[in-house]
Length: 481
Ligand code: XMP
Image (tube, rainbow, N blue to C red; front, side):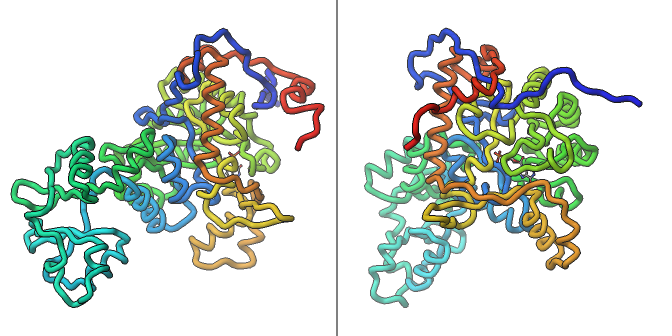
């Protein structure tokens, strides 16, 4: 009977340390933490929030992109719900509002108030039937007006008193105009005075606040979406990309499968955005997905904090070995590797990158933040948030409920969970957590004598450690306070 057993022991993060090297890095600020998410998209920080329903929805995706990473919206919702989340991320910030909300000069002040409240904007562009600029009306104009029945034309700032610019306006010039004239909004018009956009002071402030933000060509935050590998997932991917999604992740627990390869080939034909596929844990997996067109490959089988795949199925490869093996192949083929699962702290992040990953996906490390979906719970006076595996019992049942509209007794019995439900301590904002991760990464680059993540790949040398070495690595022989 043919039987195979690998002779090398597979390792994970706690089994190794990195060997310190001579370094010419004099300041942590000197190092560059940018890295490729896909062949096409380079992030300022190599961190991706996981497509889990307790990790990434709109708020998390916005926060991740503002900090220079990216969020992948999970897929355990209807297509319209996922599309709406994409739209909300894309609307969160941009230099130019392409379709500003407009109102007719003959509309009443009350109608303007209602429109502003409904669309959550502080100003409306007043236009003629042909779309020509007639004026601007702001919250202040309508809130202070006594007569709600008066036409907007009576309270607006008329065209002749407005400062305007053309569609090609630059950020610097717009900032200058807004500042010089002490105004909040700058309408953009074409040669016929038709409104073609709007720049607001608020948006420019946001751009200045987040200089590392991950942006598309139009200055909007980037966002990814997860899809499955079944028929309706093609429609899901297309709808999300039409709404502005910048990258699609085909996310299947066993990504080295014909199902995923077929889906990948189909999506590569239909979509123009980069496609990430996974998860795999071997060089063969990376090669097959790369050949089918993957623009990045996600690596990790059973490594996640909430995963029990290895217990339930007996399959998986400890994560550090999986990354080493996959990254070697990924680098040979020019396909970035995303290390997904098991990263608990910045030390693990540095080890995953040093092993050859280009970016790292975080699940439970981000699940306790304010930006993760779901309310927090209090237990014995401490605040926690829920995190659950996407193959857990409750996640499986919820998915069935979305698909079928209802669930029966048998549905519960049919599930064989490969993930668990759990809680993690509430941890404050994503900004705080990423600050710790990126700070640790900067130090790590310095210990490796590396200025970039690509240099870290070259300089890294791992040393396997014993239990005693592991014990020595954490705080020890002191009482924690
Ligand atoms: P961390 O350790 O960052 O891992 O929380 C997040 C990753 O775990 C994977 N994931 C699962 N794996 N059963 C699994 O075997 C599950 O129910 C499950 N849910 C999530 C996924 O790759 C995620 O990014």
